Length: 398
Image 1: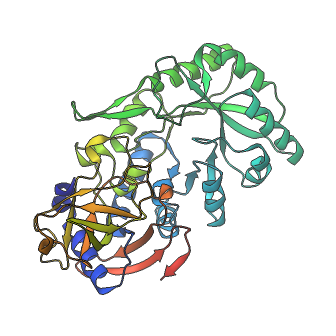
Image 2 (image 1 turned 180 degrees about the vertical axis):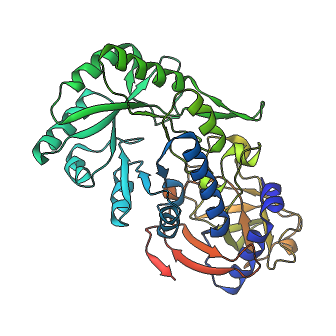
């Protein structure tokens, strides 16, 4: 992984070590190149428009960072998908459009009315019981809520702890029952994840989930005469995956990691988008021959094994940061990441206070304490810290 960021965005690494050593950015911090981010966003927006896709931005990867959310809105990506209630609440607090809720995490029943007040465009339901709660709240509020049904086929894929949906073989019956509820309108279907990256073929491929939701949409339209406006096909959403899903009938895309260039098809394949982030910390001390690096932000996305941490850049200036990456290891999710570990050949190679820079595919909202620093001017050689937010999105520096 380190060779990718060294070859494709070395200026971000160099800026990060210099700013960290000067004290301008803290340890335990994700550092974002906002100029590259903007280019990636512009490319995805143009592609979505050319394909006629609705674009809902997923922000959990960035911990709903206010600076990044503002950039998305400036560039015309102003519809957001909330992965859970906390995400909906925080996006709404930022006055962003909370346009899609309920996917991946269903809204708790006692939060339903609060989310309705956010006026979501679409709301994903996993079953009849959840739909009943939304119907009751919508009736009480005097509104009609558009919903998507998450449909799952027998061969569909699901990541661990993300299971659920309406089985395809009972979807028609369940959809008919939901359609009879007051103040609800079924307008589409969704599934997750609809594409994946094939490392052997070096390309994005559709999953059975994509086929299941397209067949469900056709079935609902034919058998129940529903007007299907949304075939929502998230999962590894990028320019390449948009082409795949749109050719199979999708109407919606939900880019997240692709916006800062962290999808595998961008890093290992030929998809558009450059990496726009690194994670920085520092060596605290040694335990015998192992350097202990201050943690708090280690959550490499485990969905793709080739993207895990095996090495890190270590140094104290732009001149030496790329010298001989050091073997690195981060704690499993069974342990609190107070520290991570470096295994230098000698202690003289890695000293307490040295900057340590990692490159992996993150999910910042899952971390314990990570900060986020946004930078401008990286590519022109005059990097400036725009803002620093803590894990709770409190502004620390602007």
